[in-house]
Amino acid sequence: MSLTSPTSKGEFVAAPCWDARTSTTGSSLTIHRLRCCVGTTSVRQPAHRMCEKKFGLFVQPAMNLPAVGPEEAYGPVNRTVANGDGLGSVEQGMNMQKRNLGQTSIEVTVLGVGCAPLGGNFATLDRTDAAGILETAFAAGLSYVDTAPFYGFGRSERVVGDVVRGRSYVLSTKVGRLLVPGSAPDPMSFGMIEPLPFHPVYDYSYDGVMRSFDESLQRLGLDRIDALLVHDIGEFQHGARDNARHFADLTRGGYRALEELRASGRVSAIGLGVNENEICLHALEIGQWDVFLLAGRYTLLEQTPLDALFPACQAAGTTIICGGPFNSGVLVGRDTWNYAKAPEDVVSRVEKLKSVAVGHDVSLPAAALQFPLAHRLVSSVIPGSGSAAHFTGILKWAGEDIPPEFWADLRQVDLVHTDAPLPRGNPFLQPQS
Image (cartoon, rainbow, N blue to C red; front, side):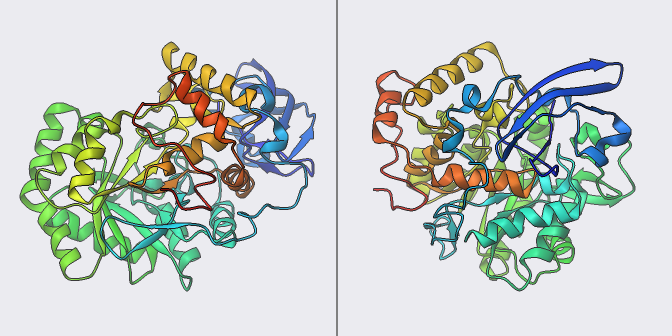
């Protein structure tokens, strides 16, 4: 289940590390003990579906978190979020490293904000909570945000636009789905909690891309979108038969629309936002792409793109945005990987990573955030977050000092690909060779 947790002040926030022992009776769930990264507290509070908003708790069976403490799940607590301590250098707004999207002049902060949760994508949070995540990020010096029409069926784009308007920002959103008036019969089948009253329809055609772009500008209330990404094309999302049809639409018309938008200066970069390597390789055969937002494929747990995709991107001048750096949560203590229950081999590998991390006094989520940026092809890492407090925890992980011996030991025990570059210092604050 996915939970948010109370701070020592009694406020409910999403916590990246906590300890919970639960029991269930019917539709009720009782938290017997819960410790979160921003405070330690003991509570005994029944939570019902009717009380989700009151207690800030949402139960999602596919997102189970383990009944273990922060030290067992991630490494020492004092290396993640200390109780009441002041913010470190990253959180105070020290200038973070920036990298270009592809060969464009667009620079993004190497830590960005994935805005799926801001639309209620497997997350229960209202507009104030969603805006608080972005305010926390901008206060820390971040300026890159990624959203999509799909997230909350427009909810995410609306809050993102309201927060970034009038600021210096870099924004990517997506095409491939149009939002049609009329509520989806079962929003949770899309993973959406309290979305806007629309339902998504796939459309990768020329007209579909142009319409989606214009409608995103309206929802955002902005006059500029920096990068436009084709969302969820590929067999992972559609299956082989339907994807053949959608990819044909993209090839015949959708890519031409993207190319026209880039050539006219209406967007500065175009790319894909997907979960698989293969579709990126196919896309490279039909056009010139600036960036691929690749979720969950180049992480501390998995480095499959090094074999074929990254060399092809290097040759094409295409860079990578790493979404899902925690692999759907398995690298922060959940039992989910690729949006489903993690198989035994994945769990075993995570346990080995965790063991090395504990031996070096390193929090595993910090290592997961920092690892992808050692590769110069990676422009940014964009974790999602369920609350401002959770994002503060992410900032502290980003600022953690990780000793070089930790990375060397991962290599020694074959827990990273032999061709994977390893960080030299903190990649959020220092250039990588």
